[in-house]
Image 1 (cartoon, helix red, strand yellow):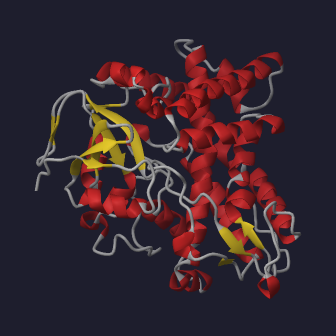
Image 2: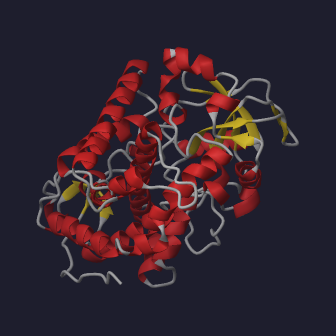
Image 3: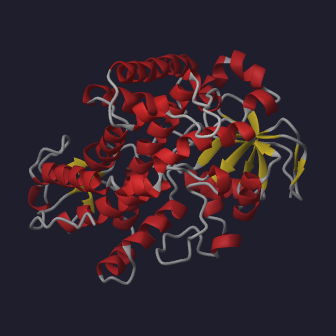
Length: 428
């Protein structure tokens, strides 16, 4: 059935999964209106979304291929989207421009480079767990005989990837809260147009300060590396704007999405007793838990925006040239046509090898191995240290992040219970 009226996508709602189901009920592609009144087409079916993400007729470049780009630049109520598409990095380039940027950046995220971070991930994780066990987790409060209560987002899920990415990019400790704040504002789709515009200015200031510091005092870090990177054949390098926007993409994706991966995995296990028992009985593995979390509760629920280079006939709907497209990662992850009739259930152990949480093909996330490394160490270490870990608030009362883009928890209050004797997990 083709619906005449587009479905309005809320800036943030109580359940992104319910909204994804409503979109999917309208078909593999549905006309929507995004916050501020931006018209778009949401792609909600796994097979269709995978095909379109790989389709050369789908662009990331709004300047060349979005019919309403100039309108977006002058309408204040659309300013939130400029933090996503008004940049010049791999998130907003197309064809040879995208290939060029990826060629310059990709070597910095080699498998070998990621593996070298394993000891750092282990050390940061254990330090945070020690702080939690010692009662210095920031938001800890007495929880009676059941143990202290902390916000696991603020005390563990956020500071861990922020410390890892901060060390990788050589971000001084004093600047890390600034990066966390500007990225959170970018992800928050409920902010006013004035807040979005102000955050865009602040973001560029924070990034410029980081680069200026590295130009004065280079270090053994990725910021310094990206400043000096050159193509081995052509000698090409990142321009100043490209450098700032590439750093924004890599730093924000490197900590904000991993924060929600950790939080979503903990929440999933603590609200699915059977799956937690299966995990403890070694019937399923941590790798399977992580991959199922990425499918069932991806950190990014909806990616804005892609653009149709030409008319695209999807079978039920024709997406006209110049139209904006939303990649419905969460809706595709819950697609029963691909993942089976229980696609809306959290069931680690199912085949999730082709989920789209990290993208696909040339648009696959460069930081995916690092996110898996962090989650693969941090989650088992957390549950080993606090075997009685439990939610400290009703699951239905927990606030989701204020966004239709990000899928995660603003806070995650948990009761730690008595910590187990410290046994360091292997950093391999």
